[in-house]
Length: 116
Length: 113
Image 1 (spheres, rainbow over the protein chains, first blue to last red):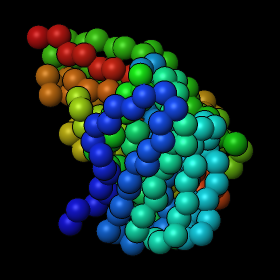
Image 2: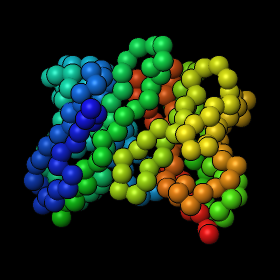
Image 3: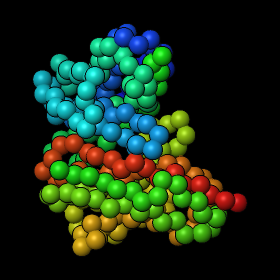
Image 4: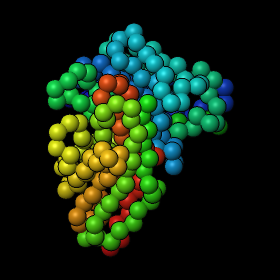
């Protein structure tokens, strides 16, 4: 069971370049999200999605776009990379609904992005 | 809206000593509360969670946390630290009627031999 898979694990970009961080999950989770992790800042929510075709902004959405065309995939796009976007990015998912499902996130291993 | 404050960006304890990592939250609705651990160069994994019911929750590796509504706190404790506990710990909150989960800034735990 793969869980949450992120690619690439490492990426170096020049300022102004664009790229997409891929995230896929095989747990049939409705909720998916992207966080960035910076020293001393913890994890900050960029965008999230509660299901296919539905996305919303988190705490730090500027400079990032997302879409959710399938339940499995939730790519994060940087249209014009800036040095301030140098960070480690984590994709995370969880199921919806009640019962024992109360919000535990399952994380990918992270993608380390450097913007020069 | 929800928010989380973790007091102390770095905590250092001796092996065998009590571990106490502090977390205070703000939530406009009844919260779900979580502690996650991150080992170097890895993703985050769940230590424990509070949803409803018993306010003292036990997690993996001997950790536990107590939900105190009056103090809006969810501090993480472990009676006796082990070298393998060295990691970064994150407290997180989700409103029970909300979708997104908000994390604190993290506390790095170091263990002295």
